[in-house]
Each structure stands twice: as C-alpha cells, then as structure tokens.
Image (tube, rainbow, N blue to C red; front, top):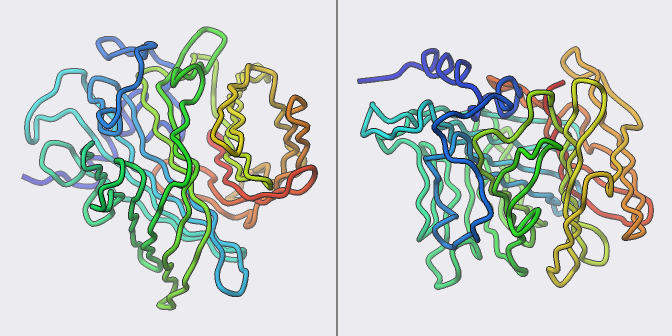
Length: 353
C-alpha cells in the first residue's frame, strides 16, 4: 500500500496543530481534545529524547553556524516534525503519526532547501531514544556509538537536489531546560510546551553544493519541543532566535505575535558554564529594524535585541535575506550575525508572514 505525496500533504493541511501548521500557524491554538497536555513532571533522559505520541506536535530541530576554510559564513538546518491525527495509536498504516522533515544550506548568496514526508507505522521515519536516532528515509540525526551520553556526540546528514551535508557534532556543555525546568509557557493564557536544548555543539564536516565539497567547522544548536496546543487562539506566528555570543554566553528568545499587534515573549540566557536564567515576558526586547522583500512578502531580516539585565544590546543581520524555506508550508529560516555589545552568530526563524 502506498500513500502519495499529495494525499499526505492533504492530511497535514487538514490537521490542526500538525507539524505542517507549526510553520503556518493555522490551528496551533485550537483545542487538543484527547491529547496529552504538558505538565511539570521532571524530564527523564534518555527517554525524553524519543517520541511522545500522546502529544499532538513534536520536533527535533538542529541549526549550525559554520565557516568554510576561506572564512565564508554558512548555515545548515535539519528538522524532523512528528504530528498526530489522533491520540489513539495504531499499527502500520493505521498509525495516526505523520512525519515531515526539512533540510537547508545557506550561504551569503545561495539558499537550498528540501523536504521529506512520511506516514508513521511502517519504519520510513521515526525516533529511537537510546541509542538516539531520528530519521526519515536516508536523512539521519543519530548518536555515534562511542560510549557518550545519548545526545553528546551526533552525526547529521541530509541531501536535496543541489546540496547535501554530513556533519559531526560533539557537545562541550550541558543540556539546557528551557522555561521552568523544561516547562515553557507560550501565552498569557498559559499555553505551554515541554522544551529543552543542547546549544553547546562543536561541528565539523562537509557541505556539498552544485557538486563541490566544502569542509566546514562551527557551532550547532539542537532544540527539542513537544506539546498539543502550544499557542493561544489569538497568536498568529513567531520570531525565534538562538545566539552564540562572544565570551561563551548563549541566548534563546522568541516573541509570539498576537492578532491585535501585541506580543508574548520569553527566552533563556545561558552563561558560559551552562547556568540557565529563564526570561519572563517583557525581559527580552526584539524589535525589527529593517525588512527585505522575499517571495512577495516583507520579511524583517534585521533586528535589535536587548536584554538589559545582561547588558546586551545587539543588532542581528541575516547573512542571506533570501533564506526562504520553499517547502509545503513556507517560512523564513537562516543564519544571522550580531554586532553591538556582543559579537556572535546564530539562527533566526520567522513564521506566519
């Protein structure tokens, strides 16, 4: 039995809060009757590195800021989404789990993206917790068998029509529990997700573009998040950043855009030693400073980011303003660099534009 790409896309589009709509945002604020609701139970590893099929939406999301030998900045993205049509599980083709993956490579003048889709239950896509492995077809994010903890040493690979990458990752810092011990509030009404990160990867490998292989090194960041109704009904999109800053500090921040023009924001300041300081709504200011026309849309590709409690005041600029993810449910995603009180690099994701 086969499932055509068109049929799978139709299922994804019809699913409120699915991995597909995680990028378009229609439906992520709808009620999730029958699905599990995030609570404050302590996260348990390695089990929580795996899938949580009783929740409606989940992702394994890796970004990397890289450099070629000549100093050219580059970025890569690898994301696997799991979404559920129903809270009732089933075997083989009766499985309610849908899978979608995105991969991208960005340079100052090029942006490549690709997408894979799969139905759960038949082994085409999935995640195992220990030893950790996440895959869809031949795209993989998996632990190396070297005796380290589950996410401490990973290999990531993917390929599209005009690009591919294979990069080795090794963490030199701890996992970070976002929000309150991994419970991340997303709205004034209390919608939330379970959310943790590994932002301390060193990366080394190679990208291939148009047949040319380029060795790269740099820093990478893995986000893990799952929920069933992560947004409120009045939220229509988000602007999210992850930054590797001079001196070794890191910053995760987001603002969720309300239909009335207001915002709900949060984030985490991560000290060089891995100490995490959660940021309440209003502590982090993210203000667009300039936009570019991308695929007929005005996209804010330059931002001022301020965190007074840490004396941070930086401007983010996209390395490539045209980093548009031309996939089934399109969004902007690309590497950025900072100037101001802290030099640095990072990633910016913007959805709902």
